[in-house]
Length: 339
Image 1: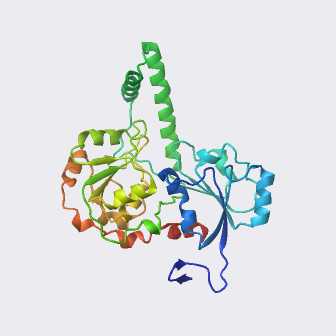
Image 2: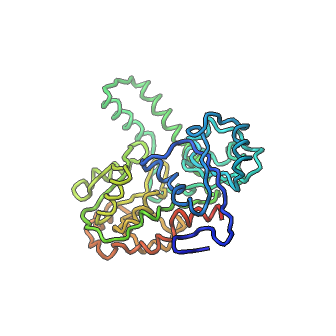
């Protein structure tokens, strides 16, 4: 039932209990925040308990079963296979409904037997299109390896260079193939904290591009930096307070969707839209399952059109998406899977 503070159990309603099996402790780093901040946000609608290698000494199946018998959860929830698969016991015979949300879908095949231990598997990115992201050939790896060797002052023979190119190109093709296996898996869309939805007017200035810039994961970002360094302020701030300040004080926020493995839906797209700043992106909102947000973003489809968008009057877009972003909060999103 809904009261003034949001969805809370009243009149005898029973809170759902969620055992969240987790591989990391929380921190202000965005990589942690986007996966785990929902716990704090949803603590008044779910009773949530954390269990995992950072919280208990013994992560055996016997230890987990004791925790389940004591806590009696309605659901077991997990995400981020990379952080838990090395120590997680096999959960096949655990009778509590088990939900897993995969983040790094380019790293794994959805048909991998590891996922069969869960009752429901969802993912953050099932699409991985190539409308904007190129498919890279061996020449890219040759240039990248040569650049790294030059930076590290390493000399390679022609044979060693060919071997490295072959190795990295083969792994790239394998990951491309893995990413395509997720198209049939239910999509679990990103969400934002209610605290991060802008609720007051800010002094806004500058077009900002706040993003990690790993060349091996985001080659197009590197090109954007080189092409638009005179028009865009580039930042790599991730501490929670500074990051929030940066996005709320921007006139516009640039959010490209290209990656090494294809077009994807950045988690920060939702944070950007909730900030009240204008958002410039090439995201396919229809494919992302959020067509209602299309009209609140400034769209581009090439570097040429991006150049024009960078010099628009952004004021009509300020705070425009905020009412709709209240439909994309953590509370709304996690009620979709836990009820």
